[in-house]
Length: 423
Image 1: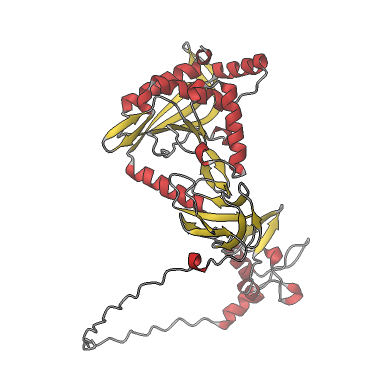
Image 2: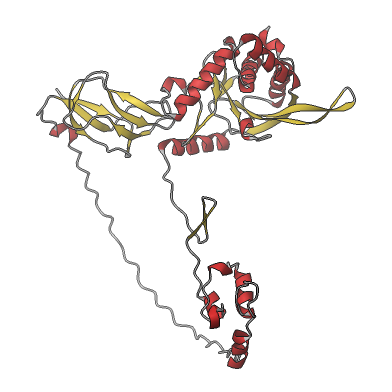
């Protein structure tokens, strides 16, 4: 008996999916466990495995098309099997057109309209124009031959005179040449295409981009955000990282150290590690740390499960693996769900400080800026030091200002005294 393959729900927020790629065509034999297709969800592009075997009898959605969850995307069965009853679309119910009641036409009496007064334009002497056109500059030392009026118009319009062909005497540029000049659509300068005319193109919204827009809009407009910004000294953590790499022979990033410090700070401040519900606040004792990763279509947030129990080298390996597979759209649904807190780092792009929108259902997100070398005051003296700015965005329904502040105070102790992370 033929088996209907429906659009699967590959994430808890998925409402529709885009068929990114088919690996089989109608008439091909499919075995159980074969990768049938790639489906783009609201969070990632994932491989879809067949749980049936037989011949691919029907494909209900083309590559690049989008369909809602549970709609038919394929049928697998025996060769020659009749599947017409499975793919027959239900006939639409007839809808009676509403009766249109014409309203009586209302004819208004035309109001008397005063004819506008005709104002004659001032006459311009052709002698003046000819004088301006023929008042030409003399060419010398390879300069462009151009009349003063044409030169004035070119300056006003920002026209490159080297691109204008003169039609006057001896190739002189005159007024009509400037008025009739049409710049090229594009000028190639240093292998960069610079538009010289108004132009644009449309970039279709992917399923992921539409989902990002929807979820972030819901977060911003439903959760009352507030922000706490702090600046930490980073000299100790810079030294700590060098010593760790040298002694452990394991290369870790500043982001790995901060991720571990954040996880430990959440253990000590569990109210920040929470979710808002209408009738309760759910406080998680475990830390599933979401790490925002930029991909071509937007942003995904793979999750480091039980981050507080992992060391920095384990966190480093997971983040690298997630980042690589996120760019290749190979993350699994289970790897991008269940976060209890999220961090977003734009420091590697030179961003000194920024604020993020909360990744719901989390109640907070930490934005991490770049390390800046600048003068700071230590023990009453101005010295050169390194600092980093971090901003905590909180949902005020679940996390009060004092609660968020205590979390940042704990985080400061770990960051500025990184040896305590290992204790």
